[in-house]
Amino acid sequence: MKHTISVLVENKFGVLARVAGLFSARGYNIASLAVSETLEPSISYMTIVVEAKDEAILEQIKKQLNKLIDVISVTDFTKKEHVDRELILVKVDYSPKYKAKLEKLFKKYVGKIIQKKGCTAIIEAVGDQKQIRGLLESLSEFGIKELVKTGRVALGH
Image (cartoon, rainbow, N blue to C red; front, side, top):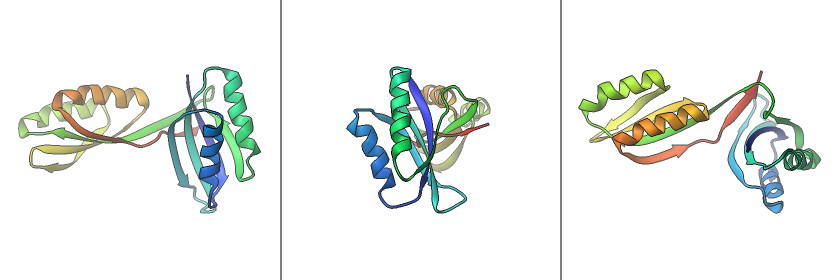
């Protein structure tokens, strides 16, 4: 099962490497990682999605993260109410005849065309994992040429 964990850290050189090293040293794969400064430039917010087969592994990950000197706090969103989102940019085949069909899709999924050039369009969409997956399945009929996704970001209520 994939778990979303947020880690508040001091924004210092090498902190990201130490956090990533903790996962790799124990053989845990990071499925998604997003890092950014907070409103306080000396603090960064990491959202990490990790595969953990059972609760014991997840607890071990959280304990190890809390031991790192630059870690301020660790929050596991697995059983907490939260909102998470991903951003995607998708390059698809495009012609004016697809415009109405794409607009209909964008009413169902949060997306928009941000650039049209020749016979391609770049689409931007934001949503939770289920919404993004649904949009990508729908866009496959347009011929996906390229796809870029951000890591998941999350905030608790």
